[in-house]
Length: 365
Image (cartoon, rainbow, N blue to C red; front, side):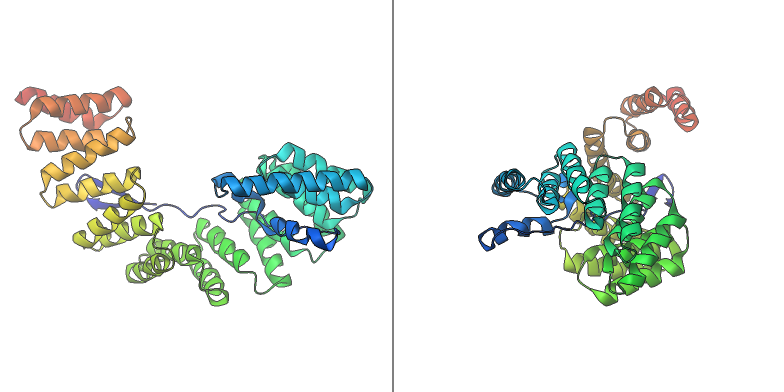
């Protein structure tokens, strides 16, 4: 959703993510007591390793787990749990082809193992094979109609495919089985938000917060819905709560800047964007919006230097070049203005406004 404050500034509300939670994975262990500690690994979410959350020591731990479960399959090649745990260990390390093969081996031994089908679905989802993932989750549900994880994961994949109605049905079923499933409520709120059903989205996010007030993501998503509804005070409160829980929540600061800007509280908006940039120095839109606000406040040197940073991060940022051209023109630096607008046209030859302004500048020069 684009929010425009007037003039040449453009503000963008980051849309709700179609899915943001990692897939749930379960493990089954039948190993001796002295190996119990190794099974803790399998309570990790399968997709967490894809975003760089593991340290070198943790990866070494995962390699050890893989070795242990490989050995377990060699000792007892008819043990489906050993193959399941091996698959989870592979999945935790991002080795999805090997994970799929391990889960399939488990199912070859025990074809009616709902949890293994759920884990197989996770591996397929990690590979981007959404149809295969859906089939695996549906099989898990066919075997165990009360399989909360499978319904929840099914909702994630449907959401990723843009099948909102199917995602809603899956999340609702997960909640019916487990009324305290925070993530299902939170994702349900996201899907409702994508459908423009703000009231339902707010109710779902509030329920997630009621069950567990700690995850910052629920407050952040609630802020998005309030912002899209024009309830700016409520949006600010929600973003501030997300930041209170997670002081490094870049997007909460960024969206807080958007809301303050829409309220005309430019100093507060600038502070929020500066904080977002402090956390993520390469946050292009935070730099861009900050530059526009500096321009609105008449701090042209700061506006120019900030927009130049945008171009350094994103050399094809048309809006940054265009606004630089406008700023240079207003300062009488016509040569620089012309160069900036020529760059706009180089990137987008159909940019009519840039053509018009460039022509006016050439006539003045």
